[in-house]
Each structure stands twice: as structure tokens, then as C-alpha cells.
Image (cartoon, rainbow over all chains, first blue to last red; front, side, top):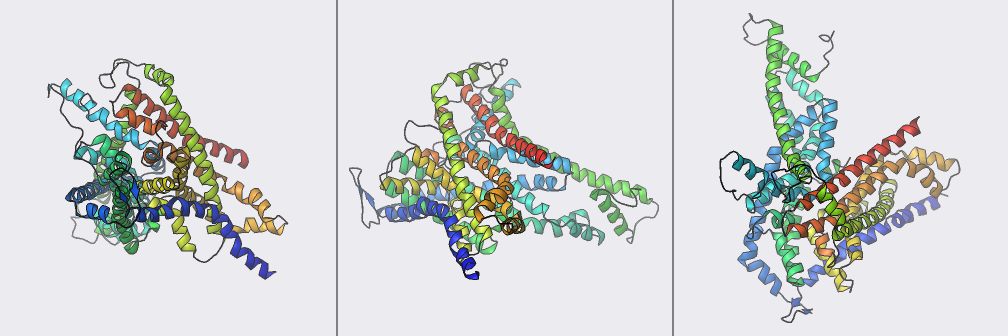
Length: 291
Length: 305
């Protein structure tokens, strides 16, 4: 009797998991190993791919300053985006966590809306505002401040703007989750021991909300650094990010071995950020915002 | 009455603050109520700054989207300001645009199939992870959420090149594989979170009354899990419906989903048609979850009553 229960315990979970595990293995794990191998293959002059062990792609990717500069630019853009999201997002998260029940529900519902609104629409929506015939130029010309439309779009600043707009809800949500979990009594205790509300915030609330701030920052950085759509829609010709190089190599030039090497660079860079984060802070915090 | 039992945390902390300051070198001439009022006012100024900041950030998040929806009704033939009266002409134009109608059909089919498949896989895997103990559990639950830890571009390239090497070209099938794999973790996390809250006792009670494990699942566990299954499906559908990053890599030439269609149209210029298309998409992707939540609430109410 106990034996059969034991037998149940060992076989059933594997049976239940097998479709999902097979999907992850076949569609993610093996493909990633495959592009590792593929990155050592070579695209010949006639466009065929030659198997083997060639270091050409890696030599090109790792030594050409063109790729290095774009990698640094990508990290810079993602970093600025993350900082801006934190600065813009902390106070609203604090407000939501401390608002009355009714306001809180409404604000959380509103915060969820951007997640349901397509990324491409939210990105292109800025063209309606900053474009030559957009709302801002229309307003400025209407007020007689300028006679010609000012060129505001298609530069690094608008790429960052688009990314902040896209990623801010992730940041607010993560900070809110950690603020909400703080035991109110701790703040009251600090206040009753004579600290001002600012001191109570600095000594109690802020440190306890750091895990959420860190989780939000990780998401913003990784998602920001991995995008190629925002630079294509809101950036100029010189505002390519690293993922644009991948897209260019794979889809436009059909140089798949090079594209493999480039995407592995992106994977290693962003993977190390995630691994470092996991080593010191743990990824558990991020899962909390799903509950 | 309210003086004895503080109702709001603001009032409570203000009183606490006054009590704390009492020991200090304060001028005794100011009465306690006056100081209380002063403290409340001070808090209020800080709080109104916070409120103003929050409102500004929310406006930043929503004004661009609101402008898309506004311009979609612009009667002018250019997709920009000024507004020249309200009109539905761009929605009519959408309806008559075959490419867009086709893109909608593709997106709906893709999103629906993705939701079905990844929810099925996700529910089964969540059952295994939450209800059973087995060796390597931590590793496996990490592996199952790995698709969101890998940047989507890398996932897209890896899947595309691997299936290409297997002679599976860019196709609807490839799109479906891609969408399933990166919606799976979201479904899994949602279902897992719910499953943890369903007590084993209920299932064990059913089993002890003679129900087999499969009957128990369908009669007890699944009905209790239904809200999460529903949420997972909606989640998977919307993620799939909105996706562009992976889709641009996987889609075959000539096949467009709604986001890639918008992207292709953007390359020319922002026409009011794009704003109208965006509006339809917003209404769909925002409306569906709200509708879902409404239905779930209605279901819960009728079951409760």
C-alpha cells in the first residue's frame, strides 16, 4: 500500500510536467545550445552556411569597435531608463500603498491597463505628440512660440522616453508590492519613539522597500536593454541598440552565424546581470508581483 | 469618539507625533489642538505634493494613449492635429482594408491557440510542482520560467535558427511554438500562485469519499482553479496578441499579425488609420480582461447565492 503510494509519487509529477518540460527543452534549451554551435559556423561568400569550427564571427563581434560602441550605448540607455523609472515611479508607488482603499483599487487597476495595451501602440503614440505635426508642435505654433515645427523625434532622448513610458508600470508595480508588505506597526513604532515622518520614512520604509526597487530596476534594465522596436520607431539612424544588430544580421543580412554570436553576447551580458542579481538578492521578489 | 479610537493612520500618527514632542522644549502657549492642526497641515502639504506627483506620472502614462484614441476620430485627412471634427471614417477604412482584417484574423487565431496550449501545459506543470515532491524540483521550476529570463530577442533567434536547421521554415507553426514558449511561464506563475491556496484537504476529502484522482481533478480541483485558468488564458492571449519582438523574427513573409501590421504601416507615416487600429486594439485588449473579470465576478456571485 505504502509502496504503491511511493510509486505514484515518483512517476506522476513527471508525467504531468512532461509536455511543459518537452516544450522548454525543444523550443528553448536545445535552440540556445544550437546557436552556440552555430556561432562557430561560417557564412560563405555565396550565402551558404558552412559547418565547422571557425572563430571569425567571434573575432568580428569581440574586436570590432562598432559592436562594442553599440553595446555600451545600449547599456547606457538601459541604465538611464532604469534610473528615470525609479525616480518617476517611487512616489506613485508610495502614494498607492498609502492611499485609501477606493483610490488604491482604482490606481492599481489603472496601473494594470498599460500592461494590456500593446507595446507598439504605446511606443508609436509619442509620434502623435512629438512629431512634426504632433500635439506639442501644434501647441507651440498655435501660441506663436515657433513658426516652424521643431524636430523633437528620432534621437536617443526619444528612445529613452519611449522606454521609460513602456517600463514605468513594471517599476511602480514592483515598488508597490514591497511597500504594501511593510508592517504598518513598524512605522507607527518609529513615530511614537519620536522620529519625524521623514525620519520614519528614511529609516524604516525606504530600506524595507529596497527589494521591490531592485526587482523593478532589474526588469527595467533587462527589458530595456533587450529591445529593438523602440529604437526602430522612435530612434534615428544612429540610435541602434544591440538587439537591432541582431535583427539586422538575422533578418536583413541573413548572416545567421553572425546573428547567433551577437545574440549570445546579449544573452551573456544580460544573463550576468540577472545572475548577479539572483546571487545577491534572489529572484523571488519578482514573482511576488504576480500574486 | 474618534479622539479615543483613532480611525485613520494619518490622524493616529499626527497624534503620536504630538505626544512625542511633548517632552521637548516647546513653548507651552500653543494649545495641543492647535499643534495637532498644524501637524495635520504639515502632513497635508507633503501628502498633496505626493498626490500631485502621482497624478502627473499617471498623466504621463495615459495622455499619449488618450491622444491616439482622440486622433482616431479626427475627420481631417492627415493623422495629426488640428482636430477637424469627429468622424468614424478611419474605422470604416479599417473595416474595408483587407490586410488589416486578415491581420486581425491571424492574431485572434494565434492568440487563441497559444492560450489553449500554454494554459494546458501550464496547469499540468503547476499541478506537478505544487502537489508533488520530486528530486530536482527547484531546478525544474526555474527551467520552466526560463523563457522569461532569456531576452526575447535571443529566444527568437535561437528558436528561428534551430527550427530552420530542422527544415521548418518561418511559418504560422513557428509563430505558435514561439508564442507558447514565452507565454508558458506567465501562465505557470499565475496558476501556481492560485493552486498553493487551494487546500489539499478538499481533494483528500473527495478521494476518501471514493473519487479517483482524475474525477477529483475534474470535480474538485479544476472548478476551484478555474479563475486562475481563466486568468492564465487571458494573460497568454493578450501577451500573444500584443507581441511584436519575437513575432517579427518568426512570421513568414506576407503573414502579418496586428502589431506587425501597425509596425509595417508606421514605416510609411502615421496615418489616422493607425490611430484607429490602435484604438480598436486598446479597446480589445483592455476590454477583454475587464469583461473576463466581470464574468468571473458574476459567476462567483451566482454560485455564492
